[in-house]
Structure formats: C-alpha cells, structure tokens
Length: 252
Image 1 (tube, rainbow, N blue to C red):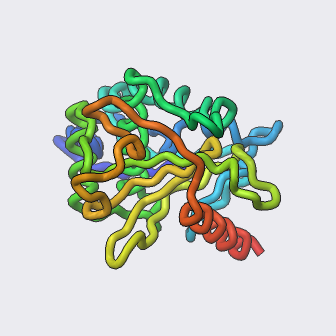
Image 2 (image 1 turned 135 degrees about the vertical axis):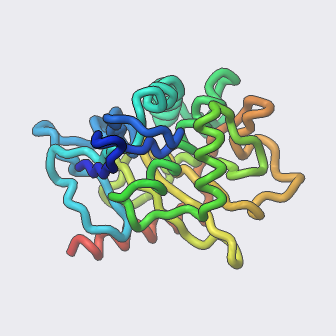
C-alpha cells in the first residue's frame, strides 16, 4: 500500500521529503511500522492476518504492508540506524520478562528505542494512509525536528512508557499482533497516543501528563539512558480491551 504525490521543478517531477523537506526526484517508501514487525504477524502465505487499524477501513488481509513514500534516501538511512537496535530490543521483552525483576533496558538501547518509537508516531501522523491518526501540529513539528537532527527527545516532553501485555487475558490475544497508532483521552483534556506490537503497549504522553517529579524509571529517560518495562496496569488493560472490542465489532 503506497501513496506518492509530486510537483514540477524545471519540467522534472520532484517530491518533498517529509522529514528534511528537501526536494528529490525519488522518495523511499518506508514501513510506517517497521517491516520486521509485519513478518511477525503474517501467515505462511504472507498475509497480514494480525494487523489492526483502529477506526479505519483498510484491507490488510493480503500481502501488502503498510508503507508510504515519504523519505529521501538520506533520511531513510537515518531511521535504519536506530530501527535495527530498537526493534531487536523490544522484540525480546515478551520472552525475557521477570515478574520479580521486571525488565530493564541497557543504557545503550534506550536512545535507539526512544527514537524508533517517536519515529513510528511521526510516520503515522504525516501518513496519508493513516488519516485517522493525527498528532497536534506542535508535537509533529517537535518530532520532525528531533528526528531530522538525530536528537533524542528528553523528559518530560512526549514521554514514552512501555508496558507488557502478558496479563491481558482475552481470547486469542498473544504477542503476535500489531495495532497501529491511535489517540485517546488520558485525563481531563489531555490525550495520549498508543500503538502495540510484540505484546507491548507503547504510550506517548501529551505535554502536561507528567509532573516535574514524575516516577523515576517508569518512562524512557534518554538523559540518564535508563528505562524499564512493567506489566500493564488496570488502566492500560482497559484501554487494550476497549480497542480490541471496537475492532471486533468493526469486523462484524
């Protein structure tokens, strides 16, 4: 699934990279959610049978992945540098989590994981395909600037929390499921953004969700290069149960 639009400069068709805003003749079409996660949810014939798109009707029960022309070659390379480490680090949580100790990322993983997660939310927000998901423009701009410059966003801005969903007791649920980004109200008029893969619920909090003395260790901290995964709390279980119920109803 791809979309590409162009414009003319001196008679040549050009395209704008959505990250660095440069004009190029050919754009790359990265996966909105990385390619390796698609492999994890396909059946033997290559169909995306466990990929959920909240509140949008796109047929993914086929061999097409969710990807879109949006990056120049240089920017795609920027993403690949943190994507490999980030995906490898997140993929192994499900099988290595300890109920007693939780799961802590090593210091050299945290920045790559943070950049990966922020890039997925940014990709989804600027995508034409996922028109149901849109970040506030100031968040989108902050993500674009930081990703383009190769800078990790520091707390409390767009804080990331990663929770393990192994305690989500719903029929048919396991870690082989992707749920593309969606937004829900968190408290009062403050929203949070979510997506899920590898049995993890990824939350990115809007500004105002975290207090200056937020609980240390719960969120990815790119300054201290620390972060851990805990079991999903009751609120997060409720969020996941709700989104899966909506998807089940939509499929009927």
